[in-house]
Length: 331
Image (tube, rainbow, N blue to C red; front, side, top):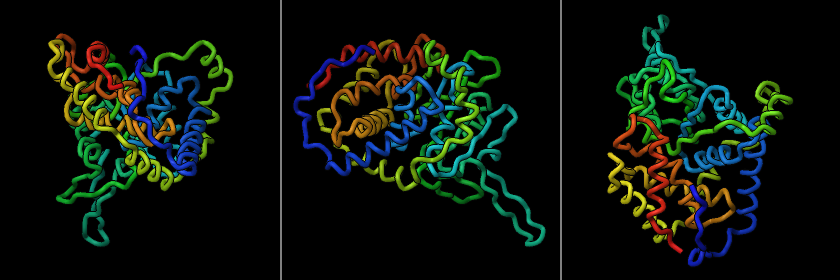
């Protein structure tokens, strides 16, 4: 998108208490820096991932193989002292491979439930669109409600809980399109693109995804992450910005090029992303740019174009960019 040209008049508030701001920013910078030890040259992608973590949202990373999707996700997981599981999704996987399964214990004569990889703080669902819709659906409840229903019981997932899913472009061989209701569970969908020649040369020379990633240590604790998420919750979103978000959603719902516009879940997601972005920039209040810069990543995969193949998020992002030119930002 073209950068938003607006002022922050009317949004100026006293800054965070110095100690709080310094603590939050120090923690975020440690996390950023640690990830960038292995994921080189794309600060925007790193920031998107951190925003999703702060906002308690899940993220879908789509791109061609070999551009660092798994490295980026694994670097975040290794940077936090939390439980981590990686699910390499394949066409023959079953929902029980994700959620868990009951195993009969001959000594006690009862079935014991063995928890699956979804029971982790950070879950990497690698190549999520290579598995069948039945197995994809196993993620829906956990992503929306942070619970898992098995054998008549509802089990709560520990916090923080974030699903980082990667997928190949939909036109690749052996992929299953994610349905709209599943895409709506992701706070953001991002695309990495190819690195610049200089950054690619650094990757070739240092091979960080091989040596450094293996030895990457945690720089934040579970309590640090929960504290940062609570700070993001307290960031002020002025009513004029709430109206701005609703105006954006209304414009997508009435756009002739879109079959389905931005859902209420999408407007909530945009507000969460704006708050987390403000915290990322050391503020306890949002400004219009915090909303504007997140619209494509939050809304592009949620809208459904009339004249595009399902799941063609690129078409959705193009239409969203056009819509944003028609919605005036508050000043």
